[in-house]
Length: 332
Image (cartoon, rainbow, N blue to C red; front, side):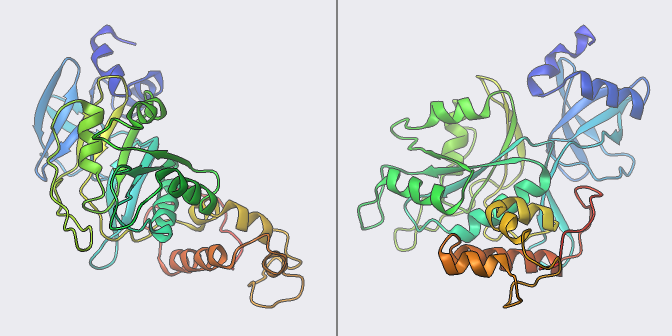
């Protein structure tokens, strides 16, 4: 690897990206997108940060976290992504790119409000669709919303409801869980998803060690917060790793394929794969393994219902850019 590119290693540059760059555009410099301002990109380039105007139309459109090829002062190509976190547009059809080349997604939930299983399930599904690992981060462990909240009990309930997903309990004011979170991040690229007021900005500031993200007040009546992060931005973490900050998202609409849902509900999907008939709809058909598991208590009705809802949502959504070319999964 060229010595001049050493400054990009903490941002995730590696020999694999070097090969991809050479195969995509010969003689170009790499740059990672720190911010996207519509007509310009703020890029981390070798030994410098620079704003580069978008003078040509790139396909795909770049987003924060992308690696781009820069030649003669122009961004000329987006390097093929290793992952893309996306959601369905809140208004209308199509998808919204949230972050590229993400390794882990931190699903931030405040303990000053009810922890919503549906939100975690959707966040998990779009993380799996991107090829990223979801991690639930419970914030405000020292607070309560009128009743005493036991953070560890809340964490155990989340672990039971979402098997196989790491859960970290944090309180920024007391420094609880921040070192554990740094350890989980390591040298990976991570992003945060969570509704406004959940404590995302406080987590960002704690990880970076500076007040780079504005924190906002939360209404006491319903624990709702204002959007304090308004743009996506990539930050290099002092102890290693990269963090992509995103605005609070009130609704996470799926644009994932069925594989993302299957991985989110791996326990349900594994049982469903043993049904007598490959086209079992799990609605009273003979030999339905899901029905048998519901009857003997090895599957909970709430989890199966959530699996059905998200699977139906993905079936109703035409994928814009599928994660892979794998054959479609069995119809539910």
